Length: 132
Image 1 (cartoon, helix red, strand yellow):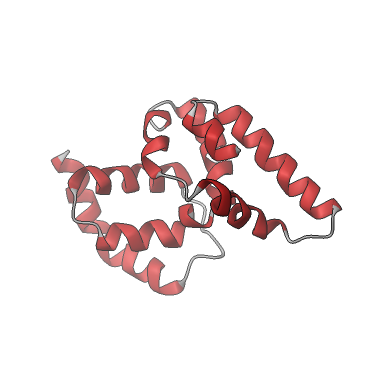
Image 2: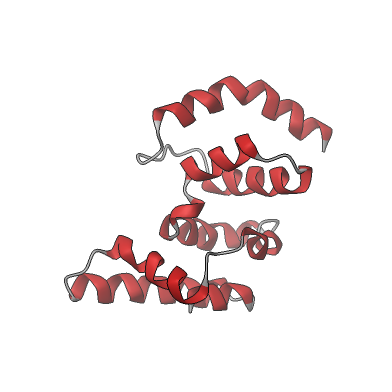
């Protein structure tokens, strides 16, 4: 359902649904980390392209961060891995934009190898932004 709301352009509704799903899971004695997996079984994985229109407006960033903490595929570690393997320029740009929305706060779930990779690629990323 939250994925449907994102697709319809309503980040606020998606965030409310995510919060409700996590609260219901906690009250029901379930692990809230299982909620995204249940949604994926019904709706399929979240397409990153649906997030692209929301990125330029900084007012959407808090909602985007909330959504990104809910879906494992949008974790800092996974985005960095995708960026490392991506060959298409537009997709790399989207991944970099999502990483920027994540902010500068370190993600405790992010693997050390991803952080080392990011430090090594810092100069490359700076050059990438200058090309755009």
